Amino acid sequence: MNIKTLSNSRINASNAAANTVDFLVVAGGGGGGYDVGGGGGAGGLIYVTNYPITAASYTITVGAGGNGASTNAVASNGSNSSAFNNIAIGGGGGGSWSGISGAAGGSGGGTTSNTSTTAAGTPGQGNTGGQGANNTSNINDYSGASGGGGAGANGGNGASSGWTAASSTIGYGGIGRLIDIDGTARYYAGGGGASSDNGTYYGVGGQGGGANGNAGAATVNTGGGGGGSGNIGSAAGIGGNGGSGIVIIRYYGLTVKASGGTISNANGYTIHKFTSSGTFTYTG
Image 1 (cartoon, rainbow, N blue to C red):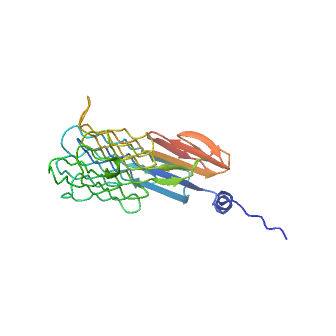
Image 2: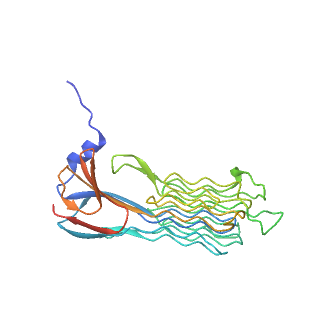
Image 3: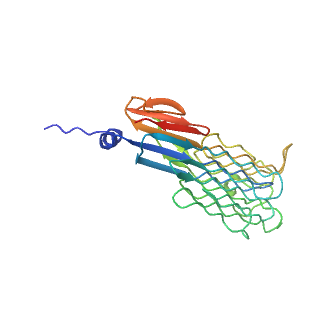
């Protein structure tokens, strides 16, 4: 007897109820910190399958990314995203050079000093930002800044280092989560990387739109965290902005049963992708 193995997508589809949806909600990522800044935390991520719905209109909110810090203060958190009363929390802003901690959020922002408290993520949505380190030769030179947390892992810790710090001592952004909801497996909600004082060396952003350090801007519609800034160049000290969030909804079958967002199909599903806020109207 021949035994045929079904793909996971076909198994899930065959078990799906007639009026259910799968959905991904990603909040906006936090901005990067100021002047040897910590990386911004990734936006919170919620992924739900086989969620029952009825014929109705549902408000979809897509959160903006947080602004990078332009003064010696914590960067702005990202804004929340939501769908079907499920709220993803915006990512925490990165901390700044004089021992200012990153902020809590969907994932926490990175800190710049080992005297600072690490920033927590939201359970089930993201992870903690990394821990910074002081340069013992100059207490005001926080080159060992840390990365923001991602949906899949904590941000990397910074190491005690100076003006010519190697990239290996700078905190990296936490990795996001790998999800295939629209026909392509991709990472969402990666944390931002930190920067050294001279800006030449920086932490790498987490997969999922997280920006590299040295004031990199996160990728839009990923919930990635912004990169912490160095202290050189025409925009010295100003952290990178976090990436905006996204909401993706799908249901089994190629018959369009709803309006709202950009509509496509893949793997036997109809997909509604929201890159900005709107309304999902389901007719069933």
